[in-house]
Length: 329
Ligand SMILES: Nc1nc2c(ncn2[C@@H]2O[C@H](COP(=O)(O)OP(=O)(O)OP(=O)(O)O)[C@@H](O)[C@H]2O)c(=O)[nH]1
Image 1 (cartoon, rainbow, N blue to C red):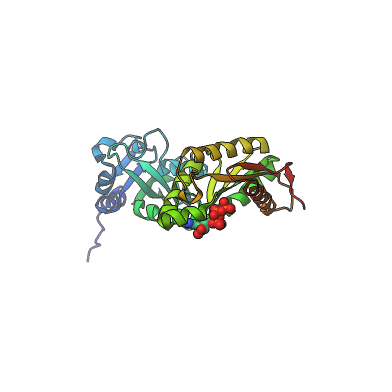
Image 2 (image 1 turned 120 degrees about the vertical axis):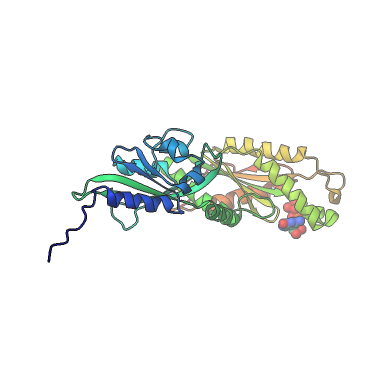
């Protein structure tokens, strides 16, 4: 009997075999070698990005297929041990398995070649040699656009008012609470406007509920058009709107309130229910300096009281709290 010697296997063979498998994968994937050069770019990745393998192989330009401006891919971050930057570059990230080796992250990508905007989930795993040194990293990609869009639509449903498209009451409550905390941290004033449509019952009686709804939509648009980026306008309920004005003094709040009042008046929506009048709004304004162990309910009550005064004084006017409110403990 003679000894049967196994055929010598070239050192590169297992990796070559793994690359062949990745090539055939229906999941988009690419591999960077230890120097950060693209050493595999599969068909599915070509299909996703519109960039062909021969255009990127051997280059350090994988990022160009996914982004308009220079930045590392997730594979680059892992290879260059810059994973601390992942939070700044991606919307979300996780470490599957909890260890340091694998990294997953998700973000919107405006892919230059295909011109498509896709929400991509990237998963990166390093390939180690026998000594534990990284010889390559594999990045696989999942197109999560449909799931992300569904999530955004759900979130919008949860925070938007169906009729006007403004923030809903729940969103208002959450935002007011968050702004209250911020005002407390920064020692800045927080202003609130309560905006109520005048004689709206008569409007509904004259134009019907559908006509009333259309009127509310026009008013919502008018109020929203007066807002700055950090302001929030919400439908507080029925024919009442609430406006949160962060870092705004009572004087500034009064200016915004008067602008809103004029803007609605200028819509010149006739209210046949009230003689020859146009639709108008009354506005109550209040400003608070947040204090520890307080909540913003006092600010809402103060703005509401000011609104009541504006109605009482004849409507189509603004009313301010007489002095800035320091919330009681
Ligand atoms: N069309 C429509 N009407 C609504 C909606 N929500 C509340 N309303 C109506 O708004 C009217 C509010 O009436 P009131 O609270 O008496 O107030 P008002 O007539 O505006 O009187 P003042 O506020 O005192 O000027 C009621 O007739 C409600 O039915 C809505 O979503 N759509």
